[in-house]
Length: 465
Image (cartoon, helix red, strand yellow):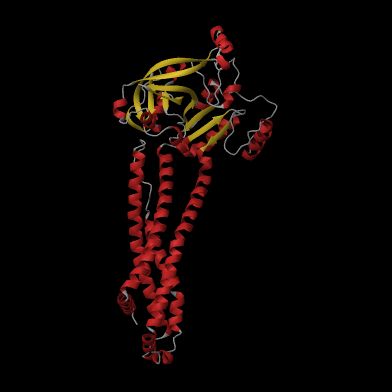
């Protein structure tokens, strides 16, 4: 028999039992659609994360910490273990082993200048943040204000929805996130440009008057803090900052260094600031370094570490991120396989019932010269046709459901001021793989029925009522 004969025979047999074929194929469609939808979601999350990192050049950033400062991810925070950890880090790097008895270098303005002169470094700026109350009209919210140089802000690191970054480091201008504006009652970012916002900072006040208030206050509830108010003008509204924004952007309000220097404030970037010495040159708890390309991250890190500082780069965590995405994909596949397994049982049931109904027909085919292989191929083509139809319509169902879910999520996120995103991705290998996988599962499900059909004895079949 020719392949066209097998295809015609299989399609004709399936068409005779249209309702059963429809129900069986529907099971495959639902199973494949669920699997495709889950995998597309996983791929969409991976694509959004990696694309956003590449777009913002987050793989080009290195965080620098003082040897006694906050730990990098995965390192111990035990201060007694600091010398041993640095020595072990030096041995792993193959570089010099730091002496635990030697004083750690200070991460101050001079160190920042030396880091900026390293070959491959495009920009280096300290991580400076301080708590403040942001007032707009009658609403007031607490947040952390971050100091960011103007040239770094204009480098493309910040995604602006309206306006622009401040032009220099001196004016009392700021960039605010649209999410914080939304919480302040401003829904249209364009209307916020040029608006005056009050930034209230906290300072320590141990004046005689404050001490008297602390002593004689009811219940001793007075605290040694004073409030300083400053007026800033909104010149730009950024898309996403803070927790969900770019890695160096950890606050919803950005101001230039010159304006920040004129403010009295209580800087608390981290708990290590509480232990900073009060005298001498000011030191930073962390410095963010931007390199020119990801290929220069490792040389820059080695040079900075040779100066006695510790480093952390997102590039170091790339492999762990890939492992995390792989685990997420495996979990989604495991959930989606439940539907495929149920659909394959439906194919087995359909094929077995078809064999029992066509018992006499199989006997006639074998009596006129059809071989066991011919009978097997007819039933395999039937199960394969079910898999092909299930794969095609399942892929369409998965795409349609994904588009509906994507629209619903974007509508809900738009109310929170988040930009539109595609949470599902359909690469070519996923579309082609879904169809081929559906056919393969259907063929495997049809193996037992086809072997059973091939074992039919034509003599017994012809005598079968």
